[in-house]
Length: 256
Length: 245
Image 1: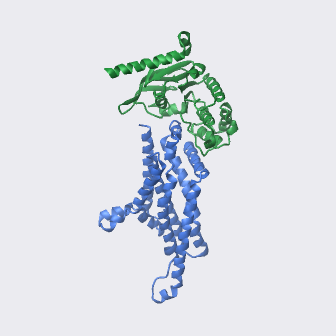
Image 2: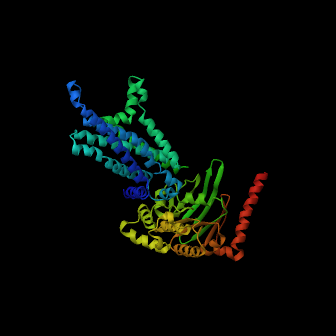
Image 3: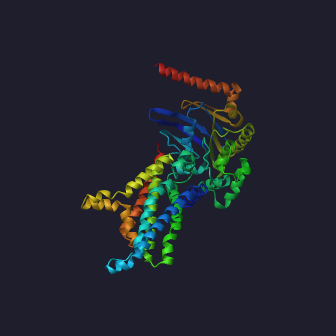
């Protein structure tokens, strides 16, 4: 446990001494803020038409549906591109500058290295999403949205991001080139993002499988305020899978 | 103590280290000498548990480097060829991190950090970022890192490369003082270094040990330089003969 904390602390120091974490967090907040502004304008526009909609018996615009759901869905898209920037250096850099030799010849297990590094990513991600939570929070303070979906949606996005980070770390473990790690994890995540596409033309259990594999579909329940065991298991297994791959990749280094 | 028996490491067809055997006792400073590309670094990496041997065994500090690697790791201090520094950490932060992962007790750590910084002459840069250090300082921070947990066995891969003459003298003195109660394995290609610092020498060439001898026994007959040149060229003659056949 002490080793995990030591490695996590060292990673955090790297994140926050070098400008990476600040750039990614600022970029994320900026983008989310921009989308929040846009979604808010759309909501206002629809709201102005409320009397007309009411007259024709059409449903009124809903704060949760328009802004909260839209915002969380957009966050996932942004994260597909930004998480690889956070994870690309996490192991690759260490291999390139030779500090991996220090870690592997110290009384630290590969699992401890992997968990320590993942924990540091989790902290950075939590800070990043936490800062962006200010936008839904504004809705709670100044509006009357349904509050539980806002929180469950946040948990869903958090789990999804941790899953992305875990996969990004696994990709970074396979190479010593940061650019290769960054591009490969971006491609992997993008592929995962659109994985449900074949479901459109398929039917039956094949379509089900593709839908099940899609993080977008899985996070949808959370965003709508339904925390299901199925989706939770999906994201947790994604995290575990990434950690497992990282562990294997690094263990393999010892057996060249 | 280090006991190497028939250690081999091959990459495909190429044997980087071929049947290397030697021993180093406690209190000895063993010079691991050889031309560039002789297999020094590969051997050292196997002894430090970084690389697994292809065949053969090595016992370091009483444990097998392959089967009891965890035990070996607790008992060795290792300075790789390139000091493994984290550029964005200050020297103090770095040594604290290494102390933590090497298992130095928390209460003792600040005191240990100050002690090794003092011993390795890096106290004056304690708050500098590692990426801003000169080659000589990087090397000495690397050395500080290797001794912070008072390991039984200290393995140093070319510890004096990149140092200026004054620093070389200081580091050699430091290594000598370490030799009193540790086993030190020191790889180098600088001959005078071996005669000045070590009390035993192992010469390796083309992945094979060509000579293992106490320095005291050696000096009586010929200079180290003569011995080195002879043993290395003898090896080359053998290789040439093999090619002809």
